[in-house]
Length: 219
Image (cartoon, rainbow, N blue to C red):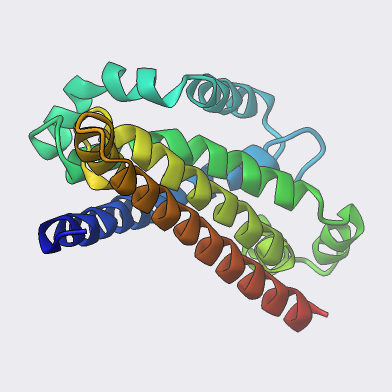
């Protein structure tokens, strides 16, 4: 490969890292409270509220069921309002975040619901407030599981970022389409696929390591 192509690969790699990292952080910041609210307002939990749970659940399900490509096109006006453009790596962060946040919310809800109800009842019997139960019981107990779930979400974001590249989002997906597919450069296509696979392997290994550490510390 020429130095020009190597520079393009490096640039596209960092664009993908930027999109995935930013959207993963933002999606977690949005998805974490959503997941907690979905959990504690569910039937029989510490803040049971059927109305809030049903409304939030419907919103999360509707967003999750929308294919990413359709979502990305549908919220172009919102993306322009937020970042001033619908094209580029920064613009792609908006649909990536909106797509990943409900997924993370459901992951966190599932992790929190796996906690033994007896642990929660014991905390309540000792006079712990709902907020104390959330911060000192639910989240610490489920953190290793949450980390694995968020790892899966990040891996999904890597795939979504490649799709975003097909619609002007930049990154490795954009490079694969413009230089690999349209110019019939199989070497560029293979290089982008190898880089994406390597990213997934690194993220999964790191997630597994952090989760195992948290699980050992809990034990």
